[in-house]
Image 1 (tube, rainbow, N blue to C red):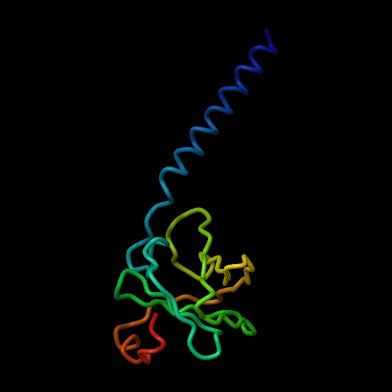
Image 2 (cartoon, rainbow, N blue to C red; image 1 turned 90 degrees about the vertical axis):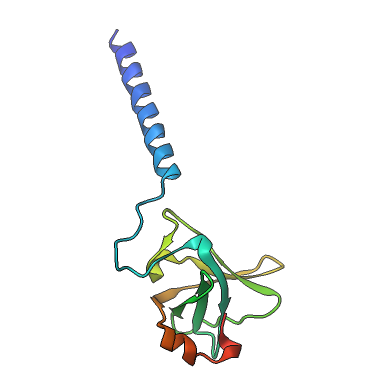
Length: 136
């Protein structure tokens, strides 16, 4: 009788855990707080790596541009055979450099990790100051 009760309780616990995990996966964490400069990972539309490649620009939703500063020594170069990928873990909201898991990849499958140290949304004036060739 005690064994059956333990088995029943552990089964109920497992079912509750699976139900909670499924609910969390179906509903990503809440939207960011008002005033935070965040974007959804699927609204990222393009990127560029001007200059020495220690910084990226991300185009988000057509008109927003975010600047991503990379750790010193990182050199992201954009060319026809390289593309930027980001793996989403947890929430789909990107609000800080910690939310980015960036890699520069080529068609042979080689992936170079890029570590972001800062992320910020540019103002319209800052966007206007970017040379056209460097826009994402």
